[in-house]
Amino acid sequence: MAMPSRRFVPVFAALAIAVAVTIVTYATVRFGSFNVARAYIRGDAVAVDRTTFDLGQIKSSVPLDVVVPVRNLGADGLRITGSRATCGCVHVASKLPLLIEPGAIGVVRLSVEADEEEREFEERIKLFVDVADPIVVTVKAVVK
Image (tube, rainbow, N blue to C red; front, side, top):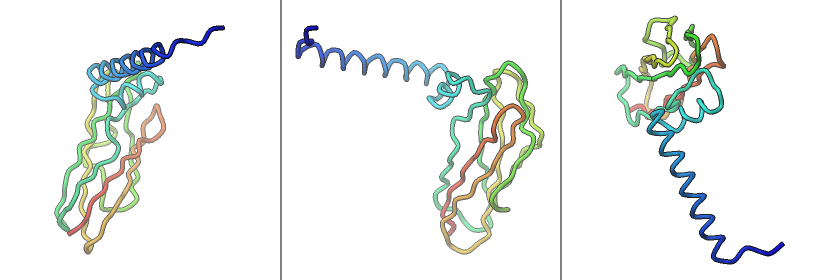
């Protein structure tokens, strides 16, 4: 079998990159983010655009809200039934259980309040969903 010409390889590579960029752009526009598009392609029932929230510097004992949009990609309604955090400084402020209809986006509000001395923290909270593995959300901040 003959080897492709040296001109063919860069043209093929450029074409492959162009196709990949087009797919990623379409997925981002169609689903709002690449993470949601990837979850849809994998057949996941639930998708979260962002699971890590870096709050930067925060003041001690001043509560902050973090909004976590959760998209139901399944054909049936899903429920976020509960949560478990690594510390008491992060908790779900939304009323649970939260029902999210098929194709809809539900909003889970987290409340973050660090009442400690200056330090960096990284805490996790699991959101338990009735149709999938728990959603793990990470909250990072530097307490001042």
